View 1 (tube, rainbow, N blue to C red):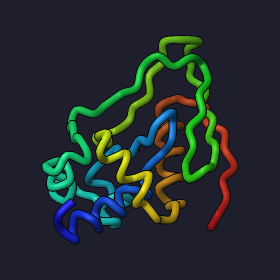
View 2: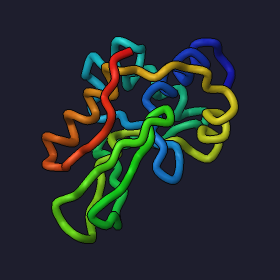
View 3: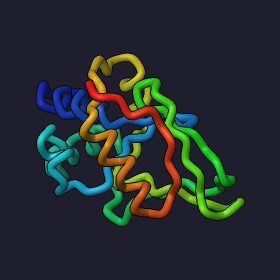
View 4: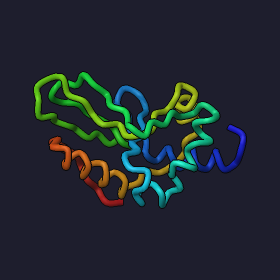
Length: 140
């Protein structure tokens, strides 16, 4: 990563990482203030894509093949999801994925705090999609 600005944007991106077998940034709406207030916008992400840390797809990414239940972790906090169907479910991952290079950098260089507002935003988004979400919501 060359520029200090890229480092800053990547560090900010790390507060949006969830773990579900691998690190997944959940960037659902690049115009939403939960992201833009933290400097995560499409123009800010393009240089990270150019240096091979992330891939951006405005159509979005999905992860397929879930059974009825799965668990994701946000900064070590487990969040259970129950899908409506018994099998063949998919989860919307948003518009950004980390590359292998990005995952390696995130594991070694992301010293950021969790973002409670973002966490609640994601849980609400899942509720709106009809998913049953159970978690321990705690204020920070």
